[in-house]
Each structure stands twice: as structure tokens, then as C-alpha cells.
Length: 380
Image (spheres, rainbow, N blue to C red):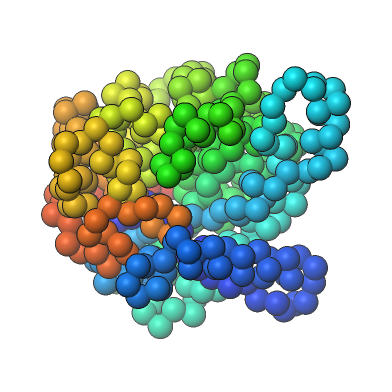
């Protein structure tokens, strides 16, 4: 049995056109653009199909999956009006981000509904779970448990006074964790370079992070809402500044260190890539009994590892590194990021290949299930 904490099921789904509306048409157009881009760099190299799906997950022995909700265009597109105004106010600054759009939250909820309709129609009997009871029932019955997750607090919108209510809505819908940062700053948090194909130095030249705090008021409000409403905090993508401030804020909000924290799709820093986790960050996650989901990205797994290795060997190397830092395998899990436009490690081209990994029961599933149950229990 395997649990994949982070997979992009929604990336390959097509939103319906009905009921006919401008929002539905826009969702469908954006999905078509993502699908077109996927044919260039997000599909299985031999079959041309998606790297993850309900059927592929079952073929890989996956019994529970963190289904990631993510709206690329709400992160990548900026407002020309805002950009011109800021350029006039601060002509020497370099901007590559704009504040979140308020409509991003409605689009996120529509994507959540899309995933739920897709799962409800699954002939294999997959089921969306929203609490520990549902999770355990799905596991006992042999059904694939789909757990919602959100990548990027920018989805919560530009108004910090509305974020608490929006996090509460997500918790009620069953969202297990929120990845605070993602590709760009978006007025939320400073982030690390994550596109391996671009490289850290070029990334920093193209998209320099603003000076000042690692967490903005929006970022702090998102984390506060997560602690209040029982949504686990995912620290993947945050840079050193934002990581330090995130753990400092968590210690203020939750001095008992009981609130679940994870890095849902990452690796240990064995080389130089800033996206990966330092031993100090791994230790901070372990202090809260959290987990690191080892990513399927070949460049991140192979950074600093001598000699060519396949996915099985690379993942084993990072699991061993996590165990060395924390003293056991208790904090290691799997979070592939399949379907998320990554360059996969050899031998892990799609979710079905997870069946070939040789992992201990704790790493394959037990640690991730412990975190999900703790997250759901924090809502009681």
C-alpha cells in the first residue's frame, strides 16, 4: 500500500461548459491551454497520456492520494493596471508578481467541484474523503481515498480579512493541507527557485524576490487560518526567509507544536538547489511530527548524488538522508508531484510505476496516514 501526498489529478480534467457562463467558458479555455502545454512537457513519453489518474494510481498500489487543486493562470497572470501603477510609484523596482485576484477563490472551488464529480463517476469506486472516519472506511473497503489539497495561498485572494473564512470553507470541504508559497511571490511569501530546467541563478535574475519580510500579511493570515481551522501547513516552495518566519509564527500560534506541518513534495538538500530542504528545515518539520513527501522530480533528487541512478535508488537515498537527520524513517513519505510539469526520475514516468518502489510500510503509507489523521483530528 502506498500514499501519494501530492499529485495533480485536476490538471488533466476538462471543466464542463454547462451551466453556460463566462466563468465556465474561461475555465474550459484555460484547461485547453494547460492540456496543450501538457502534450509538450507533462505527458508520459511513450503513451502520451497523463502521468497520474485514478486508474494509474490504483495500478501503482496507491490507496490514498493528496489531490492538488491549483489554478496556474491565477498565479502567472498579473494585472496591467496594477503593474503600471507600481512602475510609476517605484520605477527602480523589478516586479514579476501582482497581488492575488479575488476571483481565484471561486475558481478554486469550481476546480474542487470538478474533481469531486470526476471521482463520483469513477467506475473503480474511488471516493473523496473529508475526515478520518471516511479515510479509514475507504482504506478498509479497498477504495482509493482522494484527499483535497491546495497549492498556493494566493488562491485565497487579496483581502486578509476574508482569508480566515475561506480557509474555514476549505476545511469543511475536506482540504487537508495548504502549500503557502508556490512558483511566484504573489504578495504572499518569498519562494525558492523551483524550475530545475531554468536553474537557480537564472531564476533569480528573471524573478527576484522582493526585499523585506518573507511572509506578508496575506501569508501570515493564511497560516493563522490553517492553525485555527485544522488545515496542515505545507512549507514546500518557501525560501529561507519565509521558512524561518513560518516556523516562528507557528511557534507563536501553537507553542505545543501539535499542529501538523509537512513538505508535501520535496527532497533533502544533498547538492545546491535552493528548492530542496536543508537538514535544519527537516529537523523543524520533525519537531512537529511532520513528514517530507519525497518528490519524483529527477533533477531535484539527483542534485548532489554521485552517478546516474533510477528513481528507486534516488528515492532510497533521500529516505536514508531523512532518517539520518531525524533518527528514524518516521518523517519520510512519498509526494510525487506527478502531473505537475516535472521532469521525472528514470523509472517513475507515471503513477503506475510506484508499485516498483521498495519502501518500508511506514514510508510508503504509514507516515502520511498518520499526518492526515492528525490533520483531521485537529478539527475536532
